[in-house]
Length: 121
Image 1: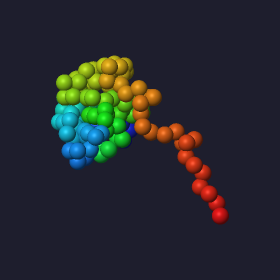
Image 2: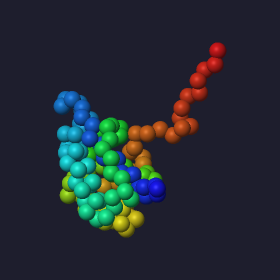
Image 3: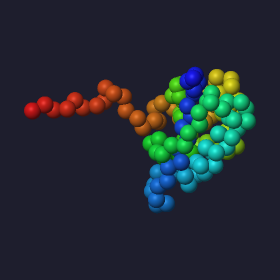
Image 4: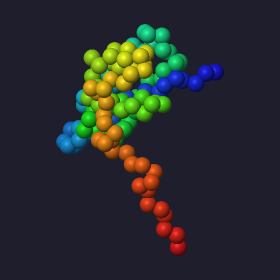
């Protein structure tokens, strides 16, 4: 069986309403994920591109967030209205939708070189 060409993770994580970072669930993450999966299937990408709901992607303030692998392209502020553009431009055309991309300098992940070595006793 062939591998998926891409995996797309859409955050649907829910945080308390008073969390200052907000959450993707409160910004319709589940609706975005559902629309993405349906429209990918409608375009013939079933078992070629895999859309998955995800818990926290650690970009809460930029939600709804989505990441496309293997490219590692991060999207923020995604709405249901953006789904068709992401599919046509990025998935079909290979060009990330720049207006929705989260700049690398704003991502909250760390490089492996930032990990402190364990102290040995």
